[in-house]
Image 1 (spheres, one colour):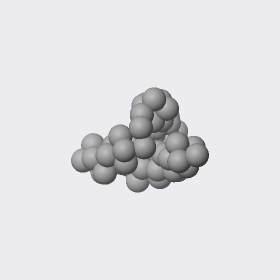
Image 2: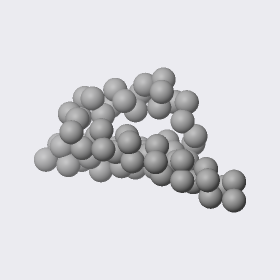
Image 3: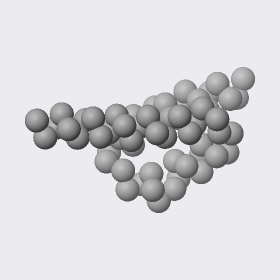
Length: 62
């Protein structure tokens, strides 16, 4: 049950970052990923958020 709870927290955490990325410039997304706050996240959350950030960055390059 503990891992399910952690997974839910990771999902919630990721959703917050991802919704921020939707309205942010590429520069802001890069700054967010390099931030201390991001570095303190669980590795699983970082991985999920990074994957989404890459998608947003590739869309913003077009």
